[in-house]
Length: 114
Length: 114
Image (tube, rainbow over all chains, first blue to last red; front, side, top):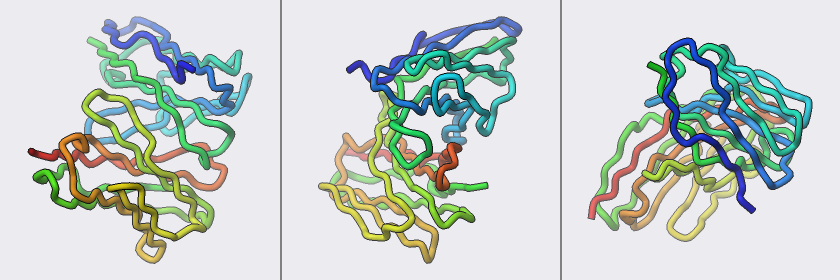
C-alpha cells in the first residue's frame, strides 16, 4: 500500500492564482481530512469528509473548497490564493467516521503564495 | 470547543536524559480521545498513541510512556533514556466523541544532543 499520497510536494503561486492540491489514499478509509500547519500553531483542520459525496468544514475553511467524488480521492482547491495561505498542507485519512481512530498523514505539500 | 495546550515550546536535553512533554486539554464531553504524534525533521507525521477518556491506565511502549490523568486534564508523554533520533516536534491532539474536528496543540520541539 502506498498509504496517503499528496501532490505536488512544493508549489509557488502568485496572489490570485488558483490551484488544486491532490490527495489520494489506497486503504479504503472512509474519513479524509485536510490540515494546514503554520509555525507555532500546530495543525488546524480545514475540511473533512466522512465518505464519498459528504464534506464539511473544519476550523479554518475560508478560501478553500473540497469535494469527494470517490473514496480514494480528496482534492483541496484554492480558488484565489492569498499570502495568508502560505503553509504546509497535510492530507490525512482514517478508518471510519469520528476521531476514535488514528489518522494516517500524507507527506505534505509546502505552498508559498507571493 | 475543545482545546489542547502544550506549554513547552522547545526542550533541549542531552542524550540518555529522561524528558517529559506536557499536554493539557479542555473539553466538555465525557467521551473523548487523546493522541500523540511525532514529526521528525523529515516532516511526516507519525502516530504514537491513542487513548480514550474511559481508559486512564498509563501505557508504556519501550522507552515511551504516557500518563493520562483526568483529574488534571493532562496526557503527558515521557521519553526515557532519550536518543538523538527522538529529536522531533511532538504534537498532542484531542477529539470529542464522534466530532470530526480534531484539535492539535502547538507542538513541542524536542532536541536531543549527543
